[in-house]
Image (cartoon, rainbow, N blue to C red):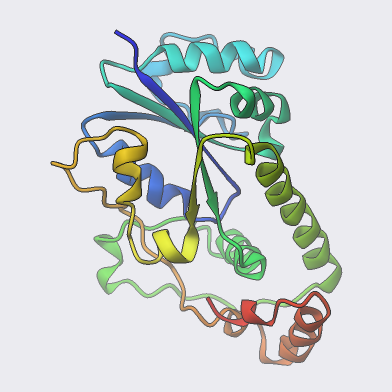
Amino acid sequence: MSHLKFVLLSTARSGTTFVYTALNNHPDCFMHGEVFHPNQKQIKPELLELIDVNIRDSDPIKFVELLFSHNFGKPVVGCQIWQPQSPQAVEYLILNKEIKKIYLQRQNILAKYASKQLAQQTKIWNINSKKAQNKSIEFEKLNFDLQNFLKFYQIHKQIDEYYQKYLLSQDYLHLDYQKNVMTGDLDILYDFLNLSRDFPLQGQTKKLYNSKIINRFQDSEHDKIIVCLKEINKMNWISE
């Protein structure tokens, strides 16, 4: 019996783990996860028993084809991937009309930049929402490296432009971090992926820090950040 295939396209620190856990916990869906992550431990053990993971880098298209052939009895199977992880695999996935596309965008690139820096500092990349109820994460406020941020900004801007360019003529679903992840509203996934509404789509990760993005940086860096955001016309990125 054929099964529905989809890919979640995005970038790191964009709420993908929230969407992943919501879908992975739905009984109709099997999520392979972030299969092109440099750390091969992201690949589920049950898949490692069926596929030689060495072909992932030598023949990414063949790897993707094998990946989607294993749905483990579920009517819907998906994975998540960022364009820089494997440009060849992403191009194949986008152009393959048999694979549905979900594009999750976090438009606030300063927020993604700060989130990455804090995750590297604290070694906490995600936290389960149940465990987070009484948990306060301590961190040292960040320095703002202007050149490093501008490089990060250009890379992520290009990735977003790439997705938008190639998805324009496709049947795809656009998820927005603020509209769908921060509010927990993933109902549009039911119809797009033909999932039963009898089961809730609830992500199991929680936003780690407050929404005032500029306050994640040293007070002495705020003026520098404001000047930068004014120059790129993104003053709204101060908060999220």
